[in-house]
Amino acid sequence: MGVHATETASGERRTVFITGASRGIGHATAAYFVRHGWRAVTCSRDEVPPQCPRDERHAHITADLAHTANLPEAAERLEEILDGGPIHALVNNAGYSPKGEGGARLGCLDGDMAVWNKTFAINFLAPVFFSRAMTQKLAQTGGNIVNITSIAGHRVHPFAGSAYATSKAALTALTRELAADLAHLGIRVNAVCPGEINTAILSPGTDKLVERIPLRRLGSPTEVAAVIYYLATDQSSYITGAEIPVNGGQDLF
Image (cartoon, rainbow, N blue to C red; front, side, top):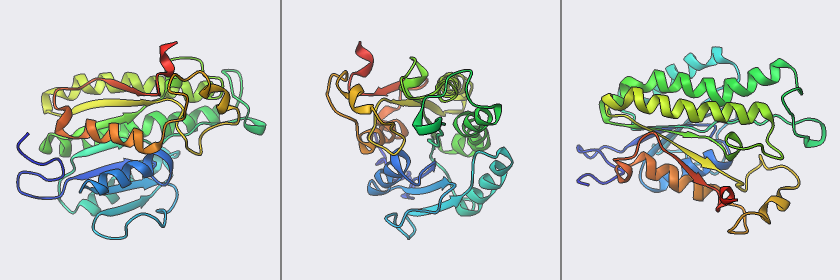
């Protein structure tokens, strides 16, 4: 491939921007990139977890992406952190899955419009904004965008509600549209579509779903992070517009 995945031709450390990275898949992804020599800039409404490195390998932006008015400020903060330097990958990972009382699933007729607005703001509009905001810098590096969708975007899920599912389906469509629109700039856009992953977003009763997964277990955040990393490097240089399932074969039946 010529250049090692962690460095540019000039020997500079590669940089990834990851949203929703204070826990779960996002945090595992940031840690995975850092372990492989990248610099990670993360963004979430929470402060950076204490287990994250506090050095030149990691920087953090605290911003609540549920409020679209916060997005330009987060982008400005990213520019300050980069200080004119390049960016090589954007991972749109931030996600919100609203629940009813006692963790109940919310269908199309449940929840007020504020719930739907918040869900789409985080799960769909933030990826739209950051993808547009970072296009020019990603074009300069031949960078990549990786969106984190969900198996719930492709089928009715027993726990993930309608707002979450439709927002993730929209993100799948956005992946396709961005891939077509940005290909002439040398930017590849793909998605990773997790199934039942062992994170805080899981609902009670998930153990029953595991019985129907061919591999008979939950996935780990690190297993998702590995696929995200693959799509963000030149190992996947001829892949764009794809959505890779990471679900233990859950969609086989």
